[in-house]
Length: 316
Image (cartoon, rainbow, N blue to C red; front, top):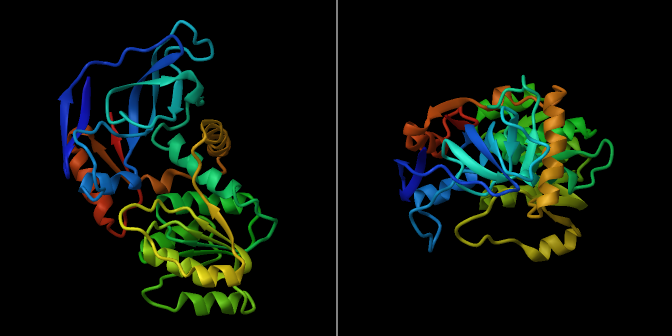
């Protein structure tokens, strides 16, 4: 099979490798789509210290069942599925435990059924235990932020504010249900939010950008005793926070990430049910398609993020 192996920084090489063998509780999936994850960009650029190469990455897989192990009873050859896998997704086939699959309706577009990131976004909202009509501000509205925005709307949020430095993302956020959209390069976001919230700040601030600037801004717009969720994937240099201010404001601090497999799969089920009920709109979020031979181009685009870019996927 063809597989894209990360040989070193900015260097995927497409190779012929053996199709993985499956165990008795595993399913062999013919990959149709594998999403390019923002969390892989630092890896591709060589920014992660101590990283060893070559690496066989890729984890946002949807496809079709090609074979099943002897103990697999709920999945059959030809089923359309999305999976949770931690690696080896940039390949024509991937072996996955039957416990980490979600069976899709046959007419569900595989390019939109990206179960892993949808699960992360759903679980990020669920961890907040949001009350009805609470105000929310998402600081960073790329692919994950725009999924979360929709989940907040479905879950009964009141005021939903989207913050991003790209006007294209703000326009899309408005189309998907944001009440207000702000570009911090053009206006003072903190002042605007205080005006909208009687000088208090939002009930929930979600940091989705994964960098120091988005973390700082989120801190500034959450009300006293409000919820501050760090959802962005923070890699590289350690971040700095004003812990004295966080203490004084009595923030409820939430780590938006999950690592338990059962939580992942519950979030995946809920999110894909919403997708198949046409309550979650993924169509405007998957903006760029690449063949596996052009995977380096996909990563370059995901790194530069032009104004019309939201998400790149690799098509097999």
